[in-house]
Image (cartoon, helix red, strand yellow):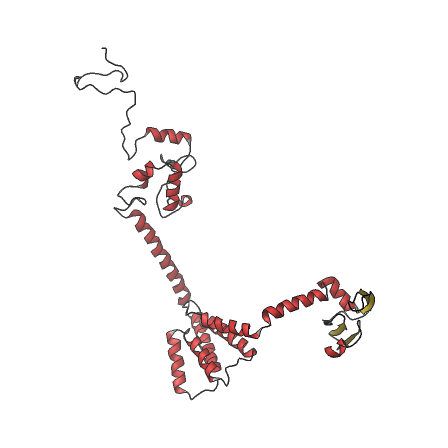
Length: 344
């Protein structure tokens, strides 16, 4: 029975139809609900209580078994109606869907990494969706020209030249868009056969990736080893561990500089991380926690750092208690202790 006829019946009325495989039932409640199942029917028929606002009293109405099962397992007919209303408001506007497909074609950009098969499938999906929404290019030359212009700009130059030759040789085509997709499908099959028969394509792609990685690796080495520009902080001809700016900075400031210039925390060089550093952990500049002594917070390392002279000077600083050597003292004099003062 049609929906409008069921709606005129009393509340609880239902009608059904069964072809032996699928059971379809329409039930009149606050609205007409249609449900289908391949294993449930209206039997056994139960009852449910409702409170109509117009009658302002409770009443029992018949409820088919398929509706009862749906309410228990799927959250109820009311929930289904809410979901459907949400979907209709979001996707039920044909103009929005049409704009989406047209904008998707316009947003596509030429891409050498994309195969002709991928390009064909993506374009055909949008065009067929527009056709399903009554926006077919057949019989509409203006729409056909727009779609073709958007699609042709995505073709490689060789494929585009083949298409132009095909158009010049043939007569005026009333369905040029469909002819274009047939042509693109054929070219995609040719491309796939060539790639399958010739393994050089796969090897060529791998070689190009390795060459790009090799060029990036050479750039890293050139920036970290180039003479006259070895210090990453001040760009002077010395290492970071000898840089005056780095040595004058406090330990937190050194950490900030190391992170800013992407230095290895073990050797203070650029181009790699501390986990990949090849400097031995037994080096005198590497602490027990495998950090450079200028970054480590070990107390023993800090004490050793205070006693050593920066910039690689092997001479130790003079003790503050040491008295200066008298100028008038003979050169062959033997000084026993530097802390002994002269008698007045």
